[in-house]
Length: 200
Image (cartoon, helix red, strand yellow):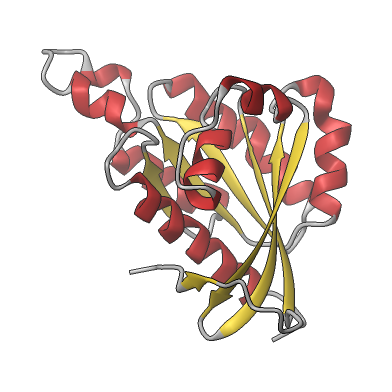
């Protein structure tokens, strides 16, 4: 199980700077994932607006007994903002690629567009695939024939293998355990970033 150790308010100089860039289609839940991890709550309307183009958040954390200065980049998924995303990619150590499980089209976009962008602009950098809004699929499972309109966990894992992602997770920002799951996702991202970094 992946997990994040704890937060720290220590004044000791931080040992490792690490940047995580979160990308995906507009409205797929990127900002909610980040807020559940960094603040333990859902974003408010004005905070969602701030994240519309590019937003950053900095945290001082402890991961595997190492102090990490973590920078999170919340990016826009609009095609017109590709240049802004490229700026974030330049500073990244690891990428989290999100898609919403309530849209099979979104999973196709992961393979045809997002994975290509991520691997082309970040050669050699690790990335993680996250299927968001999986609570909607769970709710649909009680309605005959409706569940087929959603991306299954199996399809998500298959796509993870096909695009070369380091891991696949599912996430729901409304789930009671969403904070712990967000910590697990980012904990894995941090681990992948540290593994691929010259700072080890």
